[in-house]
Image (tube, rainbow, N blue to C red):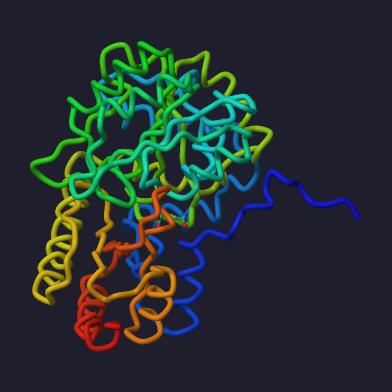
Length: 387
Ligand code: GLN
C-alpha cells in the first residue's frame, strides 16, 4: 500500500479535545476544552423547537441563509461601526474553525508563509499545514504577552502572505491595544500582507480593556478577513455557526472555498439563532457581566489558594504557572491533575511554539457551582501534585 499523505503525517489529535476525553474517563471537572455547561438563551431554544416543526431542514444557500446573513450583517454593522453588506461581504461557515481554514485557503498558495503569534490556538498550525503554508511564529512575551515590533517586522521581512490575529487571545487572554493593532496595520500595509482575524471572544473583553475590530482600522478593511462565530456569544458551541466578513472580492473567492469544503452550515440552526442576532445591547452587557463575575470567582479563588496565574483581559481562559510543582512535562501534569485532583486543564505547551512547559490553561465558561467545585478540588493541588 502507498503511504498516507505526508502533509498530515505529523498531525497529533487535538490536545484540547483529548483532555476532554480524559476528563470524561476519570470524572474530572472539565475546565480544559472551552465550552459552557449552561444553556443558550431561552429565545433561541424556543425558536429551535418551532424550527424543528416548520423547517428549514434542507440546505440553505451555500454561503448562508438570506435572513441569517441579514441579521448578522445588522449586528456586526452595529458593533463594528461599518456597514456590512449581507450579500457580498459575508460567508457563513461551520464554526470559526471552518472560517479560519477557508480564510487561509482563500489567501494562500502552498509554500506561502503566514505569521502566527505564539502562544496560539492549536488549529492555526493545522490550518497552515492543510493549506500547504508555512507558519512564521512571533513570540508574545509573558507576563504581558506583548510583542516586540522588531521581531514582528523580522517576520514581515520574510514576505508572508498573511498574518493570523487572535484578539481577544486564546489562550493568554490578551486584548491587543489600539496602538499595538496600529503597529501591525502599518506593517501589513508596508509589506502588503493580508490579516486573518479570529475574534470569537469579541464580546468578552473586561473593563478597562476594549475590543478594536482590526478591519475598522484606517486602510485595513481591504486586506482583512474577519473570522468569528456565534459559539461563545450565544453559548452554542455545538451548533457550529461561524462566518467570515471581508470585502466583496475576497468573499467571492471564500464562498467557493467554503462551498467545496462543507456546502453550508446547518440550515435549521441558522434559522433558530436569528432571535439571538436581533438581541439589543443589554444582552451583550449581560453576557459580559456574567463572565466578569465568573472571572472574578476564579481569579479570587486561585489567589486564595496561592496558585500563581495571569489576569486575562479578554476571552475566558486563565494560565496557571505550575513551575513550583517541579514537573518537566506539562502534559503529564494535566493527566495527573485530572486523575489525582479531578480538574481538567490543557497543557500550555500545546499553544506555544517556544519550548514552554510552565503553564496550564483553565477556562471559566461554566456555572458558578462548577467553578466552585473545581476550586474546592484545586485546594488539594499542593498536596497531590508537588514532586
Ligand atoms: N476554542 C475552545 C478552546 O480553545 C474550543 C476548541 C474546540 O475544541 N473547538 O478550548
